[in-house]
Length: 316
Image (cartoon, rainbow, N blue to C red):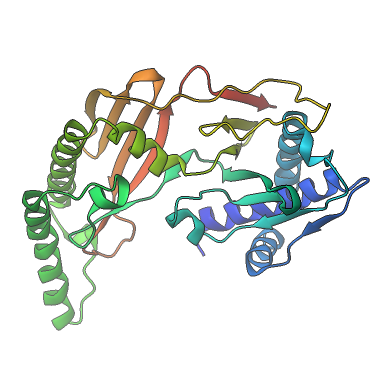
């Protein structure tokens, strides 16, 4: 398991445990001991004490703040229990990017959290000649022209990989003198096709953000070296509900999704910035996910701009 993945799992464990401890007074709380929980615990246990203390401190700050926004966590509407679940990574592929979910099944209520350790990425999507990103991201198939052009690029990579295999050599990206050309060609094709899709469908900016952010509302909790940042992604207006007469200490607005793209900008050759109306902005950096040459490339996608109405909070 990569270090970034392991640290993320460890932070998930710290959050799940802290949430369980915080809301256990006066109600039945179950922290589900599934395979994801055990993976997260092993990751947490693998780090030295100083690192574990950092995860605990950040989790403590985040949970103490969020329970004030979500009174149903501590105050059930009736004598129903609450279950806390660490979700599998596969949930993300179906549009649910929440890592941890607290569920009151009796009342059909839940609230979820996305845990990020030392980074702000929202998605790590791939591009290849086998992937129709338009269909996957928007539900709008890519054009035949795009698919034909992208097959040429990744087909050439496949030929190089197979040629090196015959000579019992593993082809590395460092072996390619013009790897930057590959990145640029793929990103050029992607930008051209993205522009076409968005121009052909007025709802596509909204679909893109929903693909990246997910189909469920959630709190994004980011643990950095000297601070913990909490952001509330309230797209569907399910966050911040009262529990009977007990109300949240702060009102969280429902977010408005973008309706159009204002500008594209290329940065450093391998990064495409997309600016939408309403304050939304994305950075899509294309890169190789492995030192080995593979017939695919990966996006590191980050939200570099958010609406002023998005509720955010920092704990130091």
